[in-house]
Every structure is written in C-alpha cells, then in structure tokens.
Image 1 (cartoon, rainbow, N blue to C red):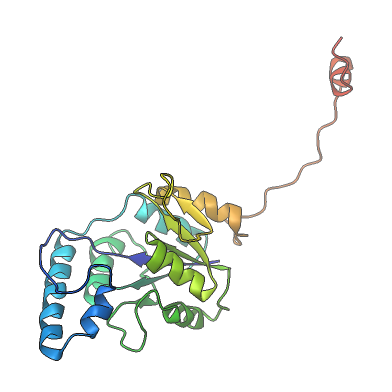
Image 2 (cartoon, rainbow, N blue to C red):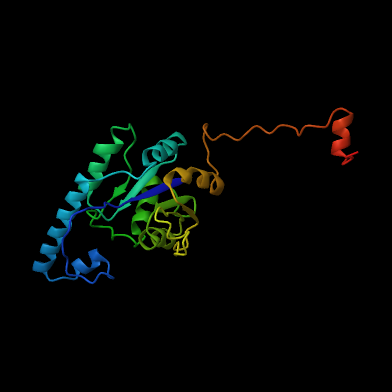
Length: 226
C-alpha cells in the first residue's frame, strides 16, 4: 500500500481577506482583480509565515512515519500551503527524526496541478510511484471535504483524522473508509484494511490446532460438564 498525507498550517495571526467565508479561499483570491489579488496573497503569505514559526506536529506523527517506513510504505504529501512550509516541516521535524522526506511533496506552488480537492495531485503521485490509482492507495487527512472528498474523487481509500470528535458527535465523515481520533490508531486500521507486505509484517506462523489430552480435557471438549 501507499500513503498520502496532508498538511495544514494553523496560525495565530489575525488578518482580513475580503472573500466570502463559505467560498474556497484560493479560488476566491484567484477571482479577484490583480491589485486585490496581490494584497490578498500578501496577507495569506504573512499568515503562513507566522504558521511556520508556530508549527507543531500532531501527536503521533513522527511515530506513525517511523511505522510506515519500517513496513516499507512510501509516503507523499499534498498541501494547500507553500513549498516553503513543506521545506520547513522537513528541516525542522523530519530531518532531525531521521525520516525520509515526503516524495512527491505537492504544494500550491506546483502551478501545473490544481489544489485540493481536485484529484489531479493524487494522479501525479501514483504516476511518480509507478502504481495504479486505486484503493491500494490511502489518503489521510482531517478535512471531510478537502481530504476525504479529494481521495474519493481519485478513487483511492481514505482515512479521516477526527481529533475534534465531529464524527463521533454526529458530524459527517465525508464517506471516509476509516475514521481515527488519533494518528496512533491508524496502523491498526491499516492492518485491518490492507495486506501489508515485507519482513516486518510477515504472516504469523499457522500451527495445528491443539487437541484435547487427558480425561478432563476430553470431557470438556465433548461438553460433558459432569
């Protein structure tokens, strides 16, 4: 199997972008007149720079990455953030942990690929890995629309990270194949949904079922409680 992760930078910066809050912000900015578009881009870039300064990993992210690497499962990233933020993630967190970089790592700076939820980026990842685009690929993210809808549009398996408990409290999971409330629970779901190949995940040895021996064991096996 192969795993695509998403990254979203949360920031504490405050700024105003004149776009309808129900509209996709990247699409809204693209539709603005040139002068307003430049100003809006500047605001978003400022917020993202602040996000890099305060970036923290989700609990279990490094441990999950190590588990995936140990099982020979490649990882890629698709993010609506910039390439600079992806580079910061690798430099600040992945490199010190001795983890391989996400590859491909597709950001909004990849002008040839439209941002999520357009599925083109997943097609590009599958092509780079030389594998078919299908259910053996897993898209992991925390947005039912931009991550789960993105994966479903490409025809790959999907996992929703529901740390906010919106699904357990009645919200929609966007049709995700699996839902976890923490990254640490994802390996269990992966083992249930996929056949993992490699030495670490070798099949358990199948032993012959034990046969009852002795009078008490034979009686118990026969249902003779007396």
